[in-house]
Length: 252
Image 1: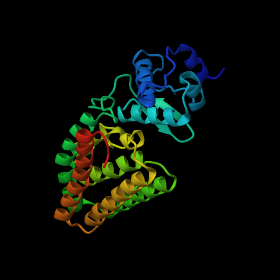
Image 2: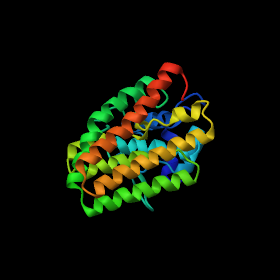
Image 3: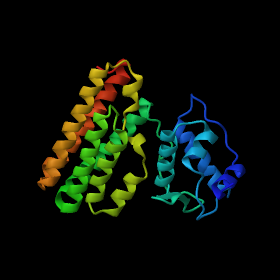
Image 4: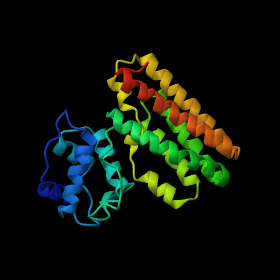
């Protein structure tokens, strides 16, 4: 039995039920095991396959759970090495698990905050960005496109695009502030759970894409005022969409 297999035997976990938020449930349990010392700092987590068997979930769920642990500063993943524990207590964070991506109130609260923070971040990014940061934004925009072409909702790619904007501000506190979230900050789950037809969802995602492109072009052209307005429009349209859903219990 390898070292990861021995660690598995020390885990005290519960199989994840279908009604749970799968990735968050897995992440919470792994965090508890790390805090309890089931895995020491510097040791590796069990393999993806072992975690899938333990929790009874897919690789996608395990990978998302690991991403959440990374956002807490608990683990790091290196190619060819695996995922290792960095610390037993999470770095100070806000909302990483508390956000319910299907709760309209949470979505509206988060969007209110994002409108306040990200419009200024976008303005600063346009003023301060480097060519390397523009290239990174373009890469994230391309990744968003590729996700759409695969028929995905591109929540991870959307989050990474917005995080890259905060990084381009050169303000480390803005970047750290946004890093405290995970992709649940992107309000997409309700589109899946609603009675929207696929064509309506596709239209929504294409609008998000066009808004991202406008933001990207403003930052690329160092148009600070245009970038600020483009980000405000982008987030406010999302806010208005979910506000209508709250009022009418459906997406128009």
